[in-house]
Length: 413
Image (cartoon, rainbow, N blue to C red; front, side, top):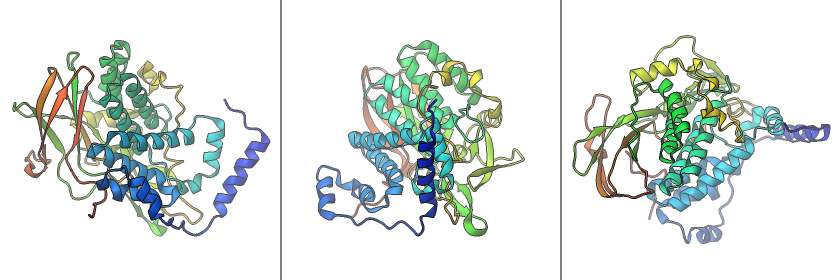
């Protein structure tokens, strides 16, 4: 472990005190339009509004806007640009969440000023690594994809209350899926053991070679509540009814996709326990097991409630294999309070509400794919239906889509 001598500790302390004495809001930078036009000269114009945020918003918010720009680029099919923004975010997060004494001491000292630099909640950091893993899978890079999914699981495992849990089933399954494709059956079995605890009704097959992934709904929202707006609370996204997804291949029957993850649940829980609010960086957990309206199956909801019984020692090498990665998360070091505390309500606004998957066995070659979405009562939402053509090759493993076509910010011609 890293040794902190007195000089280094004093330096950290002085830096923290300087942060604590800072006052006033952070002004927005002035955009140099000539410089921005040069930067945009080789970028897609429809992404101009989200990319402009990287130049027009305070530096403390850069991670938030890079995440949103990365997501927009991914959705619009500009994969190289998406990778670039995601990589910048991940480098930022990995340096901040280094599992060292120095980084830990620094975070604890400026804890209440943490909001000055947006780093995301644990669920947001998980999803950042998750989407980067999907981009690796698009390229057929199984080793890097699996490594990133492992890192994503640690972002969830190192939560405030317990630092050895991961109940984020989506990234656990993605570890299993990539391990099987890579013929690492021992790692596959370890990951599936962990997944079966969280999603006992999910069925996988060893002969599937392709995975359909669909995002539905809108991102969880953060709101400030209580006297002085000190309390941070979460709400589901607004104005959407799509909670289920189905896919059809080459005109065949529509098959229901499995709801693998409820992002809202992940935002409002730690280690399987639901909290009502976060006050001064500490989660205040519910004393009852009342429902929060999860979109997951009943079996998965029960498994989530039991998740506090699930720790690293019960899943063998799944978490142990990733123990060497330099990642440390936690609600406490992310939730924002400044010298005059107010809840930090910044959030990654183009995440989904729910993620659905369907593994299938597909022949090599071109296929016509149709997606459709349903509300909680099973009614089809025809306005959200979409179709595309894909080609399955030796190194193509996934098709990712989302129910909503809009970008984060509307492009004005």
